[in-house]
Image (cartoon, rainbow, N blue to C red):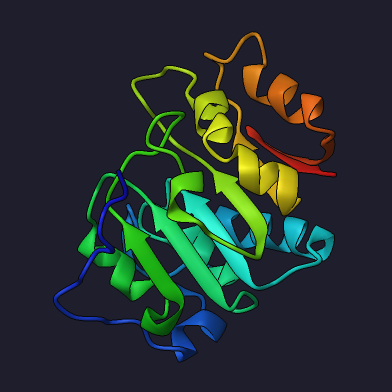
Length: 185
């Protein structure tokens, strides 16, 4: 069952905030020079070949998608929290947000998303490793569209289930940024 796209009451994003490094984070709204989201974007962007669609699972406040939206035509975000403050970080015309937790039963594949160039999975679920289940719910995208993948590998994922799954699909690690690992076919 797919969930309807989130409707926000108003939108606050201003394009000049990007060049001024003004960002809304869990610490509040203000200038955030060289923040980790910008640094991660700068680390991965040269590995991406297709800038049509970025799927951001665990989009939160849209801090990473703020930077991705400057290159991608579309940002599709999944997060069970309907966070109004995402409207400060991502341009309205580029974002489709779905307030749902995706996994291997409520799958990203069921949303029939095309032309995915980047798939980002950064979720927190009670300190349990859910990344591999989320990736299994993206199997068609991973097999048929070959996006670059960013995945947050938590300590709970001691068996590296997410890494093993991506490797089984032909992906190789291309970068490491703290807990976040990047993969490409």
